[in-house]
Amino acid sequence: MEKKLLLGDEAIALGAIHAGLSGVYAYPGTPSTEITEFIQTNPLAKERGIHSHWSTNEKTAMEAALGMSYAGKRALVCMKHVGMNVCADAFINSAITGVNGGLIVLAADDPSMHSSQNEQDSRHYAIAAKVPMLEPSDSAEAYAFAKSAFELSEKYDTPVLLRMCTRIAHSQCVVDVGEREEAPLKDYVKQPSKYIMMPGYAKQRHPVVEERTEKLRALAEDCMYNRIEMAENREIGIITSGCGYLYVKEVFGDSVSVLKIGMPNPLPEKMIRDFAAKVKKLYVIEELDPVIENHVKALGIEVVGKELFSAIGEFSQKTIRDAFLREGVKIEGVPEAQGAAPAVPGRPPMMCSGCPHRGMYYTLVKNKITVIGDIGCYTLGAVAPLNALDSTLCMGASVSGIHGFNAARGAETEKRTVAVIGDSTFMHSGMTGLVNIAYNATNSTVIILDNSITGMTGHQQNPTTGYNIKGDPAAKVDLEALCRALGINRVRVVDPYDLKACEEAVLEELAAEEPSVIISRRPCVLLKYVKPKTPLRVDPDKCRGCRKCMKMGCPSISFKEGKARIDRTLCIGCGVCEQLCAFGAIGGKAE
Ligand code: SF4
Ligand code: SF4
Image (cartoon, rainbow, N blue to C red; front, side):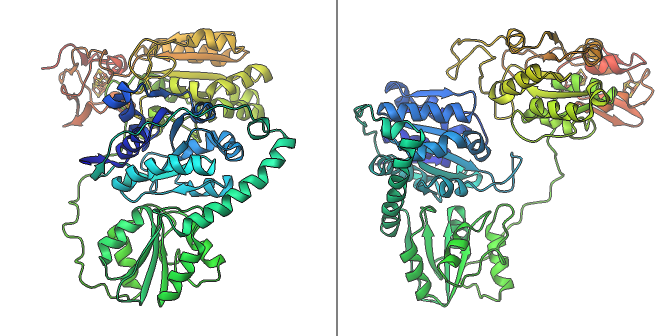
């Protein structure tokens, strides 16, 4: 055994590698992205030829992993929680076919929505699909659970859902790690009744799924994932899971009795009943929805849960402590966390200096265009001062959504509404929406904000960049040709640093009497190969203090003593502000 300091995500990755993983498939999504990146760069994974691929979306990732599993090898598919919605069709049906090689489906939830549009609770998917779910409380468990999940998957012929949350995925602890054990390639046997999900066969599989659930229920009562920690004081008993367990231990130490759930589905009913019988008052502490709480109540057991601990956002040591103090519970022996974080000025997210999306957004705002947005770094166009977006729902919804929006209001909106979507998101789930526009012929205008990378999650390659996850040259999707092939005749490319060209393109395409696509193309300024130009400066003698340059929200520009100024340490010399100043005050080199 060797000791390593690992993030939860890294521990999952290493546990999977050591358990004989053959392939990982994913679409980047915070807080799960690091798992695939760790496997991609891990020397052992390279040596053993473990496949690591960015997939076009979570459904293709799930299906690729399932294909590897059917073929007899161990596979891992990773996504953030909302990715579960995208892969749900494949995921739920995979629970019926079962697996061959072990299959782990990793869903990373994001309570408090640090980088997500909702805080849905992935445990519901395990219940809906009737598959076992494991939930580690720290990196050490993440490593152990990932290793054992493959055995569980193969023994019970089921995908295993492994649930992480941001706090576990992105915090470190010391992990005792072992060595890789090879998982032999399993035989592939043609089994139509198992793998072909048409009604005649699916009907035969449903009883198999129910039987499996019964076996998993029995396992839940006696397994490494769930455990009871009894204290001398039996006044309070707490059932908890995930990071809730850590907060309980931080608040109470070993002074209260705890049933720690590491397998939230199926739950250990006998264990819960036995535990409840041993304590005077029972609490359930779980982030997000009352999944365990409802189950305990369904067993006829009285329990305090969401009336004390919110279903909204992350917990902390403080939220747990305060809730118990409100209940009049004495907390002894463990001091309150000291040293509250110092107050710091708010720093809302914003697009970077020289961000290529800014010029196009400025053009749309200037022309009072309704903008149906999508998911990616360009969603930041929604914040002040641009306030460019009207809606953002989920991956791909801009392109599909504008079709219905324009269908509802016809010419009134067709001439002043666009959908915006990034290059990676367009590959993920924008293409089908564009086919829908072409096929069903609404006069809609779609702008693909092509910054040549998957930006928000930290610069992952995608099928439009021409490189794969290793950085090796790969097939490159030609966006112009693709949009034409999908049925759009009017396709044009503009440079978003050229405001005049942007305005021309937007006004012409909105005026056209047929669907159109504008590709607003300029690589992300943070890409290594993008070299910043000389920073610009404001000539204070020419500046009239009109603030027009402030309207596009470049963080390099500030205003002091009635004049604009440019921070030369931030400015990358994109020249967009220069085009805005009517007094020729911006230009040249910084001082
Ligand atoms: S747009 Fe020109 S004149 Fe107006 S504040 Fe900016 S630099 Fe000064
Ligand atoms: S040139 Fe102007 S818009 Fe571009 S990064 Fe510099 S200050 Fe910002």
